[in-house]
Length: 222
Image (tube, rainbow, N blue to C red):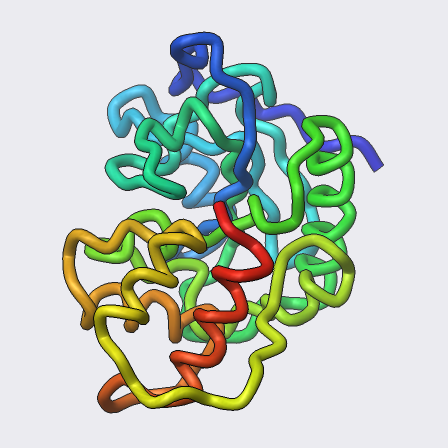
């Protein structure tokens, strides 16, 4: 089923000849899909995404993939900034406090498969907003099913070796190799990492964190 066209004025040309190498997933954190659609298409708010997926599975296209939607803001991945020029943004109608619906996830997996094929983006290029902006964002949050995407070949998941002892410097080195911006320090990066790969984990850096990030850095460097 083709997406519903709902053009947003909030876009520009991609800079410096860049093309999409990432897909950034967001949650809307708004009351409903209609409110999010209004915000993403309002000239006064200067924010948009390429796509918005409702809880019922409806897919809206707001900005053409060839253009630069204004969804990512400040941040970096793999040591490179201007993520807007290097990515496609997908907003998911969700507050972050409840599970993502089956129709929404079904539509997302189909959409991602097409995007990755069209732009030759590897699965490691599908990231969360919290991954590229760990100091200020928490979406798509701990309720998002990253494992499902990995099982479908649309993202990555660690298969760690035996857990080494916690080592903050080594954790940050591995995190940077995987793609995380690490300038805000261990606590910020660890929180973002756990949102995606160890939801519900708390406390100081643990062997399980070390094992997972070491595997990700080894197999999926940015």
